[in-house]
Length: 220
Image (cartoon, rainbow, N blue to C red; front, top):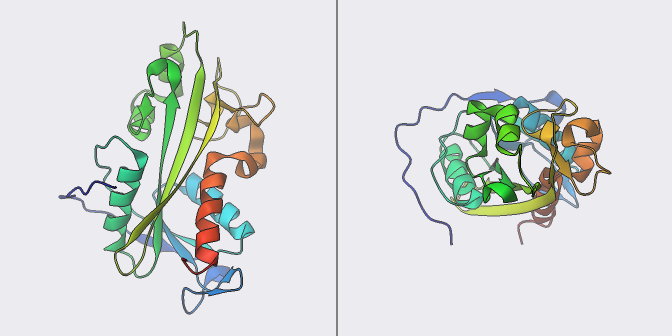
């Protein structure tokens, strides 16, 4: 059961980015193809690029609605994502998705977890690596939760995770925690070293695959 939280005092900035090839008259499915773009509410252009590529592989076009959504303080990514999509639905005409992600580090008892975005903004990857300087256990899990909100106000969440370890140093490029997280299925490479292969292996891909299957069968 998802907790409900009142969100007040939020003044999102909205801007629609609609790629011409994704334009269409209505949001519906025909077979496995979707006839209109699904709106993704985010202010992160890197994240949007990954989501568009992953869902594009499944025949689901995605457009970005840039907005700064308030993040409630909650214990789970599902609670945070669900509240964010409710807020986004008040500003978007049609179905919309949002994502919340978290890096859960065993040695730090799951920190930063649901506070990952704030921690990255304040201490970044160098700060996380300093916390792990003497760590005997470098295991971690990267989690992704997408929340889908429809015109009727219902919300459905789709989550997935990638187990892995924390690197000793920043490696590769990427964005966010990519240079310091080594997923188990990447032959010792960080997300930052994977390039386009990240979209094939990531926790985000796994969560979006679940969402895509649900969308393409008509929400049954």
